[in-house]
Image (cartoon, rainbow, N blue to C red; front, side, top):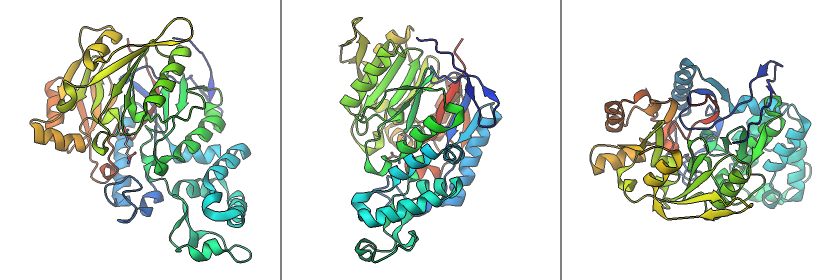
Length: 415
Ligand SMILES: NC(=O)NCCC[C@H](N)C(=O)O
């Protein structure tokens, strides 16, 4: 592993030690969340499928649930950073403003004249309303009155989106991933989420706290989503390949992590390409340094293609081999303990759907989980894992649990 020692500086000038994340379970020190905002109010029964929600959440309750989630993390000693705060602070930099506005103005949709008018309007906004516009999007009726006639404006319905909203910002896990002391801006597979990475990119590029942070993965475009990337142990990554992350994305990410010395082994793990298993972290998350909670339906079939550096700038790909064995071997442990979701196949299927597998470790053997997954949580406790329960009746309508809703930026090393 490269030992890159960088001092980062907070926006208020106070020093922060250089952040790093080398595991899924090291004590959580800093985490990025997004408190859901008005972007959720854009969801309707007509657009929720396309915007990747399974319902139309109640914003006020979703915010209460999210506040409680953040409070659990804070009470366990983690510093919670909110994406909207970082975005607003980053947008005090003119270069960030240009990048944000460029990502939001879609000339193909708006035509040249309306695009110009929108660009001019957005560039007059202060950081806070600009951040809001970038996250919440804009409808045609919310656009400023353009000079002259606009066929585009006339022919669109007033509530069509001129700038798409980003309701899935809630799932901060997917749009950036920390590996060691570097941050990777991912490449999201679906149009509904595409623009999220423009925001994480500008935050990490221009927020003063992250000015010295190095990048992993570079400017690759093959899809890789953070929910597919698990840091099984220092130097050992697993990358799910399925509905979102593609084989090309996994290969690029693996090559880049190996070349940068951020990993010695990357396990590419095929998962079924369907919504219920959209990311590897929907079927498996780590709950202790040697234990995972896993959907039993995949336990015996999950396989892996181990990818390692060949010592001369290339990679060697092996497999497929059984995932659990390959993981234990790469992690240097005898075996990876497996705690099953649910009780019986039907309960397991229900609790997997409701993110029973999607736990967030705050420390080894201490995880945050949705309270509704009663059987899975009981199994975790039987296995000696402490469970901090949160409610997620509204948050869960986007199909994501505590791991999906969090991007760890700094975890203490495992000792
Ligand atoms: N890591 C995750 O599994 N994230 C959940 C993402 C849910 C979001 N509605 C999506 O479909 O992308």
